[in-house]
Amino acid sequence: MTETGKKKIIADALRYALSKGADQCEIYVSESRSESTQMRDGTLSDDQTSSRSGFSVRLIRGGVPGFSYGVRLEKEPLRRAVDDALLSCDFLDPDEDYHFTAAGKAYPDVPAVKSAPVSVAEKKAVLAAMTAAAAKDDRIRRVERTSVSEYGGSTLLMNTLGLDLYKESRFVSVSAAVVAEADGDEQIGGDFQAAPSLDRIDCEGVASRAAADGIEKLGAAPTDTGEYPVLFHPDAALSLLSLLLPSFLGDRAEKGLSVLKDRVGERIAAKGVFLYDDALMAETVVPSPFDDEGQPCRRNALLEDGVLKGFLYNNTYASRAGRESTGNGLCGSHKTLPSVGLNSYYLKKGDIPPEKVIGAVSDGVWIKDLMGLHMADPVSGDFSLGVIGRRIRGGEPAEGIRGSMAAGNLFDLLQNIEAVCDDFTVVGDVGAPSFLIKSLKISGK
Image (cartoon, rainbow, N blue to C red; front, side, top):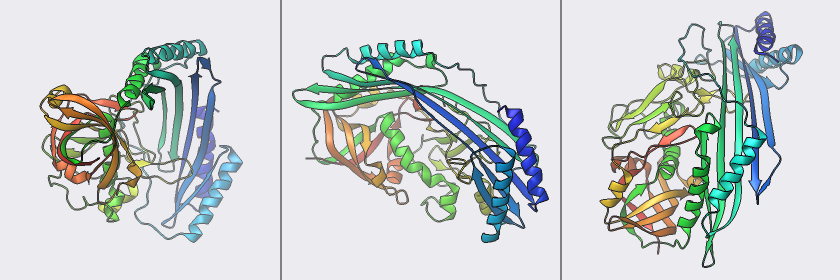
């Protein structure tokens, strides 16, 4: 169905909702599709395709919010969903903070989606080249998998306050996984990269990095227990950020689930630390002009030079906090109401090459990967995580580390950042450089 056809059906449902007693009504429609092609042992697999589509009806009657959802975007199913949403109002309490976005907002310009589908011949050539690049070293016992995946989606949002918004997204990703072996030791290596189009990805570079990752892990063992200066590789830095970012969500602050509540304006991190939520980040694969409530997206400063600047909000929690939405009302799917979520986010890069930082460390640890992230405490920030990486001895990368644990507190880490490097790395829609921590406890042998 065309965009015009969808809007005609939605407009009918909005009129129907008002005629049935709704004070306001909003309809959200989302569609997504992914297609992945893999090569295993030199054989191209069939495309693995998945798709998801549906709509939700959000409305307000007498100050009470109502909600329902469905799959078939047709006149009668949509009207029945409106009836169900109105019925749900009978079982819910009024919420004076729940409201919709009115038309008339100014939205940022986002580059139009231009990438064309990747042909079967192009996929086959790319995957064969990646497989060959990954297998160059004799220590690669097998190339487990190389893959090319395409993703596409759209969002349509209309309401009785005149809002009428539509956006599309499309991007491509490639990945590789290998098994490295030496002296009876087997290790898995992998790498991943995403971009708006395939021609912006160094596909053979992804394969080579996957092989290097597996080879570097060979022979790794637990290191001596102690407190060391620790350099976090961008991949590990992004893992730490994923644990830290929920503390900046406005709903968690309002519920008392963030230790940062009431600390806006305080220095909670070292100088030189800048952290942003930014749906318009230049390097993101999915820039977005508006959130799932129709609020304009923007760059939101979370930390600037170590100082806490604020929290992220959707419409409801912005109202409860006496603030404005930050464009962070996001839906997990059409089956859920918008909640406070994260757009693209990044830690701003510094100006020091990681090689220079390593060169200044006489006895330390370089962490490249973290395991057991689900075990960290998202409220207190306490963590005890498995680490994969290397020792640093005399300013040089040394033996590999595996089977050791790093323990500490995320907020203490922020205070103890000594250097932020210039190797800014983006994985999908999040980015970070390496950074050096003054001291962290590592438990090993």
